[in-house]
Length: 146
Image: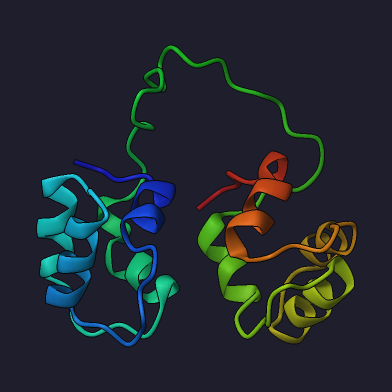
């Protein structure tokens, strides 16, 4: 089974990194995660943050959104402008202290080697309180080539 990034993030709400797989699994179980996700987390090595969890689960990510339509039934949308992968954006925003406004996000992303298209996209954001809000704000630009 493949898991959605948001599903994993919800399951790990309140994580205090670094954590090992057993600790992650226990937290996910307390947060009401699906048993299959709990088992997948249990097998992870010690990780230092959410990006590392996503990297470890990379082969398990990308399933249909719980309660949503299957991919085949969902119409595709045309994206005007650049498209980025969630893990790519998270990597470029490593080290951001939240809350942060668009200029701070863009500056950090640029320092971390982000492409100009992403830096420009981030510049236009309002103040955000964390990485999930960044993803919501740039959702129309997510989903680019892996």
